Image (cartoon, rainbow, N blue to C red; front, side):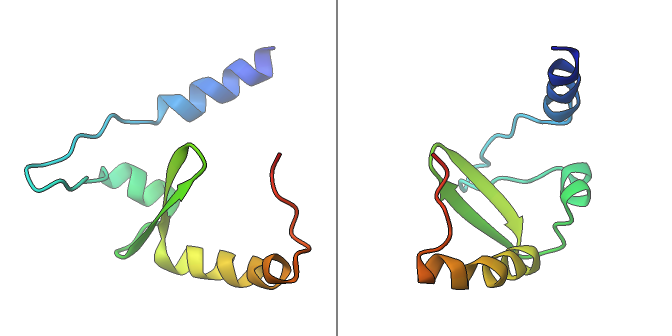
Amino acid sequence: DATGRAYARLFFGSSDELKLDGQGRLTLPGRLREAVGIAKDVVVLGVRDRVEIWDRGSYERYEAAYAGAYQAGTLEPIR
């Protein structure tokens, strides 16, 4: 549908291919860091079949918001 194609164009149109440097590091382009609010420290997560890179403060707030439900067993997994 047209809405799905528009979303995909905007989402994937802002992506970049990244390569590892000689020491195995990635450098995220500044425009991507700014777009998602990465300031300095990051958290790298392996989630199913993808890697997520979060600003540390953002991830800590996210984790705090959901940790109780996860530990209580009331957080529903994605199927």
